[in-house]
Image (spheres, rainbow, N blue to C red):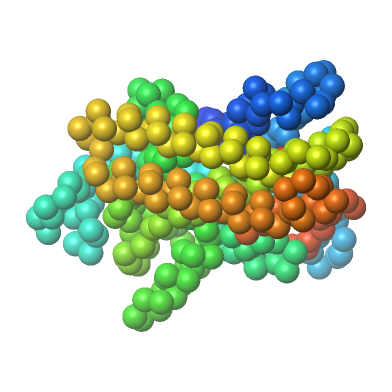
Length: 357
């Protein structure tokens, strides 16, 4: 019998999605001491801060639509009246095991290759659910015309022991690999000869604890992991919060002779600097953290700041909210007012989770 995982996928799902939401709302807390929040009724401000809950649901086959095995799924989400469009993400969480090395000679973590780096890594399996067809179902979702392809991601937390998990609460994002499903397929097909991730075969995703070395097998190939998606996703969620805040501000207050975008950008920058500053300070006193991770933090902060700044330039000007632009949607899909409907054929979607807020 293999070693039992100390942390299950539901625990990661609850805590990482909560961290994403809290970080995306953090700039609002900085606004709490700003004159802008006093332009609202105080009860409304408290209510707004408590809204925008990110939660998970499972796909179901509620709307059978044909006799040949096909069916439609409808995703609907009733949002608060004061916010803009609802958003959808498919974050397929996985939990992993600590491995000291891999016995396969083709692996980057094979001890016989005498790497200068450690061969210790986190071992995940994917395509092991839905009768070994989960990856194909996720691929089909990502390729649907009404779904943003990069809103369908695997989430591989590089944490395997519960004590380590507790120590990293509030900092789980930076120890987690967010991998778009189609990026796995793209890199597999770029191999020589090309590799396909097919139904019926369980695959493995192995990664070093710092995320700098990753690979995929049934057939081994080195996977070039980038931490850019997690920073872009975080920035996108912050922009969604800014859009909703702007809608609420316009709805509940007509005094628009203020520098709205200036105050919002200042609060967002303070929140970003505070978050990344605290994490950088933690890394400086942790001898087990590679300098490259600290460098990546600075890079991540720049990515988040630039995306938010670019979004705020889309507002008509700093003193008017006559036009409120839609927040970016690269990593999240907008749910239309009448819901989002898409079709499946002979696919078991019972293990597919989605997050809405």
